Length: 391
Image 1 (cartoon, rainbow, N blue to C red):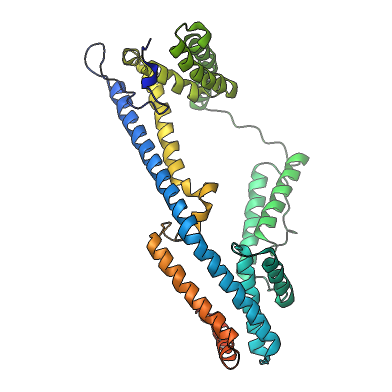
Image 2: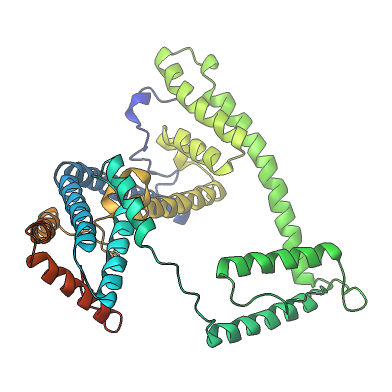
């Protein structure tokens, strides 16, 4: 039993096999130590990346988001003043249509990210969208899409026939939305499976080969052994870690934490967590871990590999966590990287100055606002043929 349980932390750093019974580490022991080093390295990277993102989050809320709010308010002013100009000035039909489309699109974009705006601002933007939004013109179906859809229908019908199902997809609309198309296909498959109709005599299940039967037998044995090992492992650990059986107050407190983990893992049927608890418990006394069997060490190595993979995945997905949602607006969509704070601040200030200059032009009255809005309209019409910046 360890005399100083407080030495081990939650991450169990230093859980290594430093000596063996014969003085030489076996391949399994060497592999265990190697994986423990990899796990600690993955943990260090995870903690560093978390600390880095936490720091960026503080800077973002303090320095970047106020600029975003100012930029959104400048966009709001530009939209409102553009609407006023549309009502006061005369434009030809083409330019007016282009300007209404621009104002409506800008309002939609701003509503999708409305930080910095008041409730009244949001309500007015919604009114502008209702006023200027044009009904979408119904586009004719793309012949290429229809041909692809017909090919997909024939392929699915063939797959169904091979499975003994009668499936007719000839009346499925190829122009429907892809998600609706997928749901309709799924519904048809389920209905055909429930009906259980076929094109002839029921197909006989294929006879399994000896190799397949042997593989299935081994899997069944492994599952049975796993259930048996799970229960026996829990009993073994519960006996060793139960705090009521520990007279030492410090060790009792130490075991209470472990017992909670053990009970939770058993209730959830989590064998991997039980193995992790066992490994950590044995690691409290280095000689226990050093004398673990080769089979047990191989199981531990499997657990460690999965932990390393999970931790690396968590580190890679940290930016997807809800608490870092603010940072995602500053991530390059193509490279997945974030510019330096100084570069982001510089870019936001440039955008803010540009938008404020346009608001000023709209406020100065004739002829500045007319000239600028006519340029917006012309640029927008040109962008329909060749992408360029507008508004």
